[in-house]
Length: 456
Image: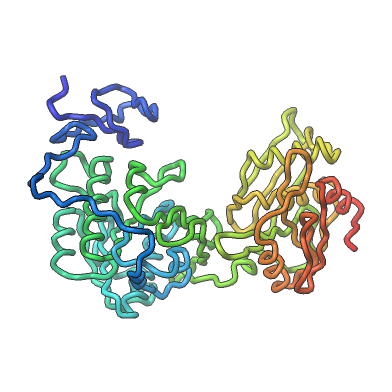
């Protein structure tokens, strides 16, 4: 029988139930409901204090003459770009990523560079000892940076220490290692993670200190713990990287003080992470002639144009069921493009194996990559290479129409800067900057150009 004031929280999704069950009704996880004690029923407000002299609710207009608070520029430009121009004082940032991707390395560089610029920075580790953190800083050449280090997991000790000594930027690595003595659950549980995040966010708002929380990632690629943490913080950043590639992508999934989907590009080396100022040159292979099955896509990631190569291979199937494999792009989008190529362009791909890869480990999500994927697939199926100086972009509809995309001028300027002279895209695309525009109103027109090698 449940005790008075007890609820049951799912350790997988954070859903709260009033009675125990073997399976969580929200996420269907087994044996994940753990008892929590609370002083009042869920959703109930705390009793009012001094209602006779309570201050009334004050409304204000949208226009305000108060200047925006100055941002803390860390000196790591790619990190500042994703944050919207720097870290806002009093904000809370959640950084997630796979184990070993370089989260601690990135934040050590951020703390060291910000401290060298005069910011008061603290790095609190719950996973490593101070000697381990110091050793990593020496290996990265950051031992002379005036960063305060601490190794602690007790939430009360951390909060009391941050209240005694003022800081501008505090890094907590990681939120899953913290525990509060006010709760009986173990470290890493939903109860502890939610309590620690809530207390640290309140501290950030009340003291005006920017706090960066490191979060572990589940097998599905989402930040572990209840989704309520992502709603509590001001920004959620994802640090991504494919195994076997030195490139790392810092992507903004949520940002209350800047644009979302902004990316920062880094390259992992022996001495830490190196910023990549020109990602297009990094993801492209400029040596030799372009082989059949390759198409350069002119995309937009956040506010910057990025050129990346789509690689496709269409081969006879050795088994009864053809195989479809894709890396760096949506598999559902690939199935749609294959269906349009077969139904609208007459390419027979139903009995052939199809492999599609985005070079460099970058993941593309925008629909403007449809035409580049289709061009790479057609180039491989027809064994006709696209010109070395041609970029491709455009969205494909189910009717086979090539639709217009946003910021075509920015895509063409980036391509021209890297030496490209032709662009295959929507019919309303205008040339410029020395670029020759090859417009295609329908996908069949673009595929006909590839098959006949008509590029003039």
